Each structure stands twice: as structure tokens, then as C-alpha cells.
Length: 395
Image (cartoon, rainbow, N blue to C red; front, side):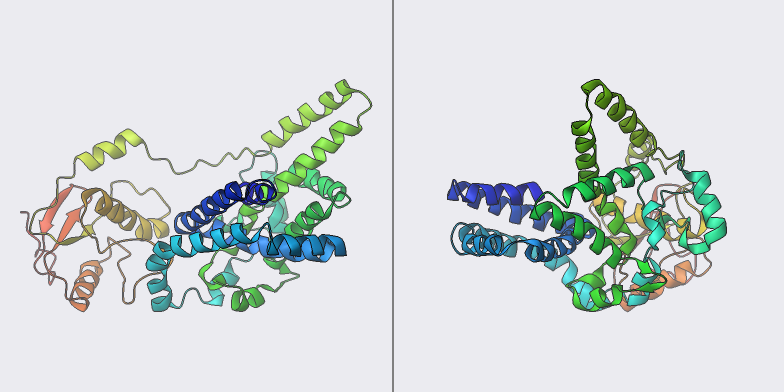
């Protein structure tokens, strides 16, 4: 996104048509980004507001005047092309999310507050990190929740990367307005998402920044900051290389340092893994839904819990349900999202009340010809009534 924007600005001085082309592609790209990865697209806009603010504050009077002239002349057509293209391309995103936003009111502040990182969160790379895991465990023992092993708080960056970025920020601050704005935007926008001595300032942004209430896990902003932090770290490494009196000294320092920075990214935790061949076979074993079925819900769950019990009860059958719905082209009552439809309560696939809750949801929405899919046997069952577990019959 940044490269497209930069290309459009550069071309506006040389070739207006090329600049308009880049601006059009940028509008399409950003709308697609919003639809497919909303968090990172929103974080980009959040970061750019800080960047633009500090660019204005750090620029000279001449630079401000030149930027104003650019917006009135060279940049006017690309800006209009971007705005027009984005305005049209964002319609699918609004179609998907506006109804949900109206129905749910988006996330309450308490949800966002739960995921605000502490100041030390920037270095929390998880207790299973090969380099820093033991140190983080020790810090957690002494500092408590400020160093948390909760999954959504494990968004930090390794120490050497941060040190190189800090050195790069010090060097960059003397370079030019763009680099100064980058440094300040990275630091201040990160502080805006943290707890400063236990006191968050996020409520201001939650209430006044557009669509902030749609972002629940604020700690993920540290994932976005990996991009500007890495840029600053590269700037620091470039400066180290340049100031070395001999090239072999430089290579002798930079190569091991880059090796260590790569090593400190290693995490020993085993991620959830699904084997493509097994998943393809499991999907192939599910026959096409009966013609009598207009929608379905899942029964049971795949064999063997893949997650911790609480998560498995919430995710397993619901995620499988919506994936199968996509593959088999039939709507499902199940699903998983940050926002749940009103009166939807279909977690807990092995709960004694699961079928009762399914039945209540079907009646609430006056659904007809709802079938069940047993995720353990891969068999469809026509379910005209869910008054008792014996109601479904195998077609």
C-alpha cells in the first residue's frame, strides 16, 4: 500500500496518467484489503494519521507550501482518482459489515480494554521463544500481568530488533522530515495503544477515531508495527555498515548480527497443524447435501479436540460448519466471527442443551428444511423437528 502511494506521488511530477493509474490501483487495493484483512487495513489508516500529523509538524514552511501546491496541482487528479475508485470499491465491504455493525453496535469498550498491552508488551515474544522465553517467564513471575502468556498479548518483537530499530530511529531523526515523521508516528501511535502505568488513553481513540469500535484486539497493532520497526532497524544496520573503517569489519559485524536477529525470531511452540491431504479426504467423504435441505447445522465435532477444551467447544464445529457450507454450497446455522447474530447461541456441540438451542434458533427465524450434518460420521440427517435427539433421521 505504501509503495503504491509513493509511486503515485512520484509519477504525479512526471506522468499524470501513470499517477492516476497508480492512484486507481491503490483505491482498489485498499478496498480489497479492508474486505479481506480489516485489522491491518485499519491499522494502516490509524498509523497514517499519526504520520501525516507529524509530517506537518516537522516540516518547514517551504515544505508545507510545496505540499499545498502539490495537492492543488500535480496531486489533485490522483487524489480524485483514488477517492472515486475507493468509494466505489468499498461498497462490497460496506454491504458485508454495515448490517453487522448496526445489529451489534460493534465492540463495547470493555472488550478492547481487555486487550490493551502494557508498555513491556512490545518485548513479549512468548514464553516459548528460544532466546527469551525463560527470561519472560521470570519477568512474569515478578511483574504479574504486565508480562502475560495470554495468546493475544504475545505480539511483541525480539530485543535485538528493537535495539537496532532504536539506533535507526536516532539516526533517522536527523535525516529528513519523512524519517522524523516515521519515527514519531511509530513511537506515539504505539504508546496510544498501551497502558501507561496502568492508565490507558485508548478510550479517546475508541470514541473519536473512525471505526475504532470495530477493532477488539488492540494488542495486534504491535504486529503492524513490525513493518516500520523493521525499516528503522535496517536503517540502523545500514548506518553501522557505513561507519565501519573497513568493509571486512562491517561484514564481520553485520552478518553475525543478522544471524542472531533471525535466531531470536524462533519460537518452540507447536502451532495447530492441519494436513491438506487429510482435510481433502475428510471433505471428499462428505456427500452432497440432500435435495430436501435448504440449510444445515453441525452435530458433534471432528474426532480428537484440536484446541483447549474451552476453545474447542466454541470453534471446532462452528469453523468446520462454515467451511463445509462454502465447499458444499449450502447455508449453515453455525459459524465463527467476532460479532454474533442476535440470539445466536450455538457453541458447545456436546452440551445437553445444544439441540434445544438449535431448535430455538430455527423457530426464531422460521427456517424450513433444516438438516443436520454429523461431523464424525459425515452423514446428513433430515431434521423436521428437534424436540428430541431422536428426531433426525438418516435420509
